[in-house]
Image (tube, rainbow, N blue to C red; front, top):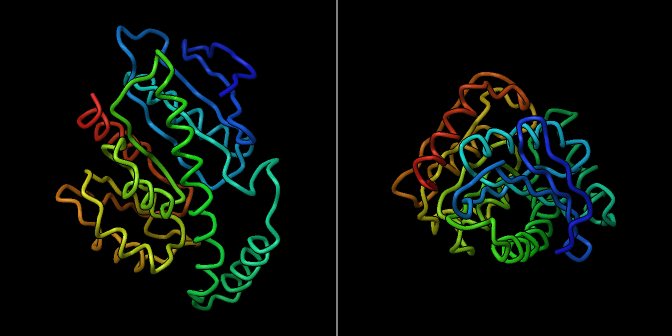
Length: 243
């Protein structure tokens, strides 16, 4: 891991951009901590620069609760090399959504499964590097989307002890079986009127999760209309499980 820039935000949070091999990312740490801070991995649909305002807002909320937060760019997003197969799958998905018909599972598999296969090892390598820093400790949480990435991480990464999952993206059917293996506490956010999400599939996925503690927090509104109080509830969830 190599830090490439550093700035102190107006609330005292330290923001550092880094690269891990070809993977760009950002780490935010609280202004003062008496011990190594717990860590929240912030998931997102790709495009660090485009997503930055929302990512830094989430990181600042995490820092106010005493947590460090970090995110990385997804494969094929931002300035990272594009995949022709992924671009074609994304175009096919957009066409299916535009005509208002059901999205073929084959399209979802072509778009999401390769992304999960590439992104999850990168998240795990990033976690290795972050936990080697003296200011970062455990436990670790995962927050955000793409939800399929969160599902796979919750299954394969034992250092993640709780997760907030955003039900705002398509999930391959193969990952429903993996969801049954999840045992960590889960807090799932669902926007009821999300124009780009299959609500019933999101409900079916929640039902499939094997966790004994799982909460579904559903609100009216579109994809980007998550109310502030829903985010605050997610923060309290992490306070319970990571503090």
